[in-house]
Image 1 (cartoon, rainbow, N blue to C red):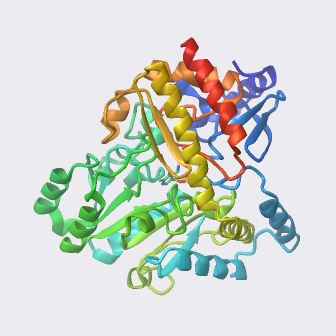
Image 2 (image 1 turned 90 degrees about the vertical axis):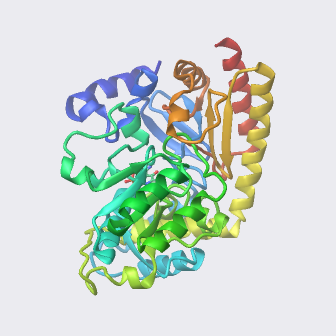
Amino acid sequence: MTGPLSQKLFATAKGFIPGGVNSPVRAFRNVGGEPFFVRRAKGSRIEDVDGKTYIDYIGSWGPNILGHAPTVVTNTIHEVAKDGVSFGIPNPFEVEMARTITEWVPSVEMVRMCSSGTEATMSAIRLARGFTKRDYIVKFDGCYHGHSDSLLVAAGSGALTHGEPDSAGVPAAFAEKTIVLPYNDPEALEKVFAEQGDRIAAIIVESYPANAGLIFPRPGYLDLLSSITKKHGALLIFDEVMTGFRLGKAGVQGIENLTPDLSCFGKVIGGGLPVGAFGGRADVMSMLAPIGPVYQAGTLSGNPLAMAAGLAQLKELGKVSGFPRLEELGAYFEKGLRSIMDAKGIPYRFNRTGSMFCLFFTDREIVNVNDVMKQDLELFKKFFWGCLDKGIYIAPSPYETGFLSLAHTEADLDDTLGVFDEVLAKI
Ligand code: PMP
């Protein structure tokens, strides 16, 4: 149960905003309840409008890698805002951002900024189609790449929890150009490329799928994506909107030592402000307007506040050795969680890499979205509400990934594990 002020706000919101929310997963429908409303957040904590505080494991769905409202970011926003909040004319922060991204991610030779992950993937797909002069794209069941028409087919995240993966309003003719394959299935991939390889513009894949739980590629699978696209003249697009600048300087491609043709980013690079980016091979990126025939634009693209906030966050991450510390926190959390789950004898899987994690209430091996759907969803709901009641905020859906931040401490994690222990004992 949420507090009276949250309840009142939600009742009012429903009169003016569809479902009372501006993004579906926020409605808590998947856990059968109502959302709380946030008054403020700092570090690892969120405070709701009724004055209750929570240790937060979502971090605005990924951007807040330093925690909420880190001083380096908020000070930067204050300073930069004094000189103007939007120009629609090039500004120096855009150049520094592009230089930083290309330095941190070697596969990215050129980059274009936009304002959301959806725009980044949508534009990367258009660019791949324009570059290859082919129409078809391959995506994987359960991978979420935002809500553009071509990509809202068998998507994860909010679309998955809708129980209605293919949205109404997406013309069948668009969806027809999107070939959906099961993830981690080399045979299915090889078959499609053998039959239709010459009309596929690109494969788009979440570098580690994290919108249907957190799923890892089987050994060699990502290499296969790379080699098969090369062989057939298609492009490989890595969607690192969630993993980019979170799992290391070069994201999953750095960890897996891969060189995708194009990559998409968002979240962490905006420091909590609206942002997206896509980049990659210079010959492909040079197809973009104004120097090439593929049109893409944005009134707020390269916005000075978003660029400066993102740069401040990235600089801080580099300065404080953020990635090793996040791995240390992640490992600590994983050890504690496994010991609780093992002691309780509850069937579970726990997938984690660095600061991203997902607990599944199943003992099935998690290979693709089908395995994720087979978990005990009723148990998840009870777990979610039990935790929320005790001041621990995990994702209000069993299909989402959790995030740690540099503001979390071992003491936070101990408190959280204590609550997990208590809640699991009761359900
Ligand atoms: N790609 C991935 C992998 C994502 O996780 C998301 C959002 N969670 C998106 C794309 C879309 O980003 P946005 O919500 O900023 O449009």
